[in-house]
Image 1 (cartoon, rainbow, N blue to C red):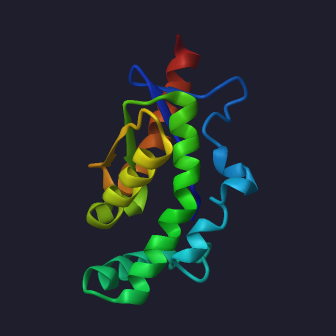
Image 2: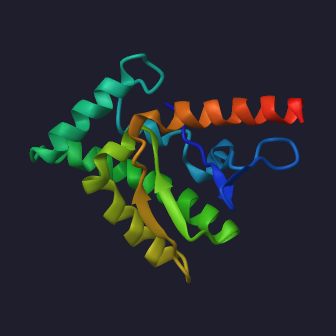
Length: 151
């Protein structure tokens, strides 16, 4: 499990000079490398996505420990989200990947954090692509590469 940022400008994915635009999680001070550990004990395990889904279900059913783990995760990612929002001044921040299925648990706390940390906060929404967002983004990058080679 890994945190990252995709920046779209005019519907076009921005990559930066070396292709690393959005790799803000590489900075240990941001806390994104450790954030998944708030959700599951072994974020690199193949079963981590299932463990996160179970955690989300537990939080929804009133499990205070599960809700606390999600709150700690969100606390660990909001500084990075605010940093990106302040650097790029986006209209919208979209929560994607597997966590987009937890819109009812995620969107409001992230919006509140951005409202608190950013003078002109963007709106927060969850991706309608759900867990497929990352895979579809990878396909788009591959298609862009092929299209550039054919041009």
